[in-house]
Length: 504
Image (cartoon, rainbow, N blue to C red):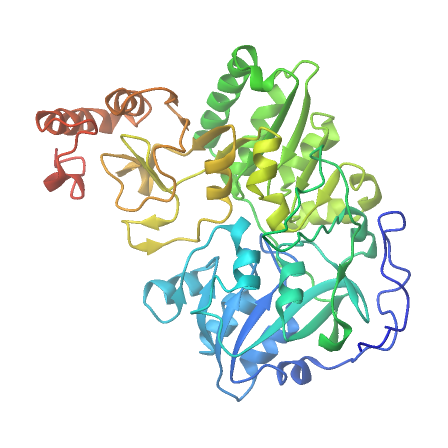
């Protein structure tokens, strides 16, 4: 029988802030001692999402150790260089799920030095728990997670939750990094609901996007806790690029579209629940909402990440609140939130990623999802992850969760890349992440292509109209050539994949 844990009880929904960072009799260790617990062949389950809330000292120590390891590394989303640079450069990372967030890991994946397989965020917790990644999960499973507080059978996550509850539940051993650089009051924003196992899985008990369920603690078997490492190293959070004139034009077109949609779409008659993809464009697009007249409707964010733009909207009173799994803020945004956590906690809630991205909730709350892409083809197929169909540039993240399950899916992207030399509206994309059946609206700086209810030929006409003017003639020429062959979805395959501005 497992002995009863000693030390303070886990914080609860009624009393969310832990009494202490370090509760009870804990197995303290140095980073090197904790790293030594990772076997030669192992699966490393790490916390982190959106570049925040990830363990730092232990992965760094694993990379610095003399032992050679063959590790499968699984995170919730993007993490920092201590994992996706150091473990790659040391040769310890052999396989990676579900994201390659920096140049080091992307290059290694594209060269085949690490084996990378993209996964939908909403499914990853179950895939880890129930064998969906069977070919990749090798050796002992070690969860290394960051927390603001830990007890003998509980922890409170730091700046993201991601898949931490599933990972500590699936792990053979648990290593917790307790980070004093993160305020204890972050517990106020966490709501950790752990779903039952199928086939006895109950509905997620939320009837409001901002509702609360089970409090801030992630619970685990105390016999699994192998090491607690103390740290005060801050996140290396996301830094947003300057908003460009193209971003502003896309945002203005999106805002005009949403205003018109408020008048004609009964889905939005009472409430508007919005999701934006992570990144500089998504953050910029949030600014468009400040100029949209939502009337007396409740407006909330229901997505993956809280970015700086959402803090602006909350401060301006433009948003009822935000539900996500990560505080993917810039350094300035993080300082801003940390300085006033208690106030922001009234309007912000973080959930496990298999809850924040659950198809069930996306459908229940009628989410309007706005995500970006690498390119879109003439019929609405969306490539979100691969340049030229071959070179991965990050991963699908939660884009597929929202594209497939939201009530209105919007793809927002610039019409060109490489300084205007490459069209991002193409005849036929060589890699498809979201099929034509999931793309409802495409927005560029040149306008809005509303594809709902249109045939393939009609969709092509709408998409050519929002392409860059310098490429429209070539796209029209391709469409005419494809039409000569007939078919419901006309293509001229010999030229489709070699298409450019001179090959029509």
